[in-house]
Image (cartoon, one colour):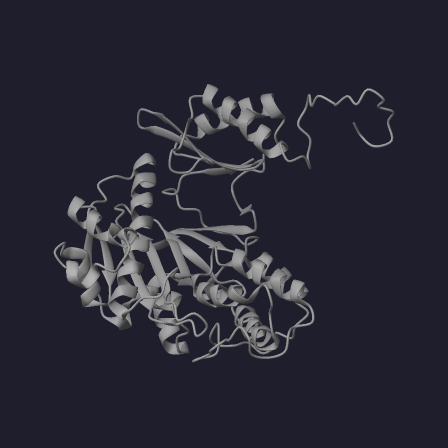
Length: 401
C-alpha cells in the first residue's frame, strides 16, 4: 500500500495497469506487444528476441522493438500501413513517418545507400563534457600509450569520468574507430586517475574533429558476409592479456564490430589470434542464422580473414594437439565451424587488416586508410538531415512508431 494510507489489515494493491517506473512495467508491456504482433502473423526471432518477422509469400514485414519505440520496414507498404493501423487501435501509437532518428541514431538516405550517424548525440556529449575540445586530435588515443591502473593521482570526480566513458560507449554504435579507445578507458571506471582522464580528453578531442562521421550501408544486388579477426598479444600492461578485435562486413558495409580484452593470458601471439578467431566465428554463426531468418541465404562459406598464418593452421588442422592441448575447449569453436563448412579461413596482410583499428592505436595515415576501406563516411561528406536527400527506390520503406 502507498505510504500515508491507513492499512491496519496489511493488505496489498493489485496492479491492474502497468505503470512507468515499476520494475515489471517493461516486461508486461513487451508481453502485451508480443501478443498483438503474434495475432497479426508475426513470429518472434529466435536469434534476436526484439525482432519480429512476418513472411507472406515473397512479401516480408519486419518490426524491430526497443521498449515502446518500434521500426517497421519491408517492401510491402500497404502491409506496413495495415500493421500501424492495428497498433494504433490497440495502443494509440504516434506515427513518426519515415525513419530519420531513432535512439540517438540519425538516418540519412542517399542514392547508393543509407548513412547512420550520431551527430546530435556527439554535439551534446561535447557540450556537456566540461573539457576543452577546441584542438582536435588525429588519433583516438596517443600512439604507444600505456595506461597503468596504479599510476597517477586519483581523479576527484570519478562519476564524471564514468558518465563520459558510458556516453562514448554508446557512440561506438556508429564509430568503430573509437571502439579500442573506449574499451581501454572502460577498464578504469572503478578508480580513474589523472592519466586516464588525459587519455579520455584526447579521445574527446578526436571525436570533436569528426562530429558527423558515420557508417555507410551501401545498397548491393548481391550480399556476401565477410569477417576480419585480429589481436594484439599481451597488450594490457596490467594483466598481460591480449586484445581481441573483429569486424563483419555485409557486402561492403560494416554491420558488427567489437574490441575486447581476452579473459585469459595467451602464451603466444598465435594463441591470442586463435582466441580472436573463435570470438569472430561465434559472431559469424549468429549473424548467419539471423540473416537467414531475414531472407538472406547462401552465405556459406563465410570468409574469415586473419593476418597470422599459425592461427589459420591451428583452425584448419584438427591434429595440432600438442600445440593446443593447454587451450580451453571453447577456443576450438573455430575448428569445428571450419569442418562444418561455415567458415573459410583466409590470410590477409597486416596492412589490409580492417580489424587492426580495434586492437591498437594506429598512426593517422594507417587509420585513415582503414577507415576508407571500411566505408566509413567522413564528417564533411555526411549531409544534414534537413537537406534535400535523394531517396533510392531500391531501398525499402522504413517507418517509425
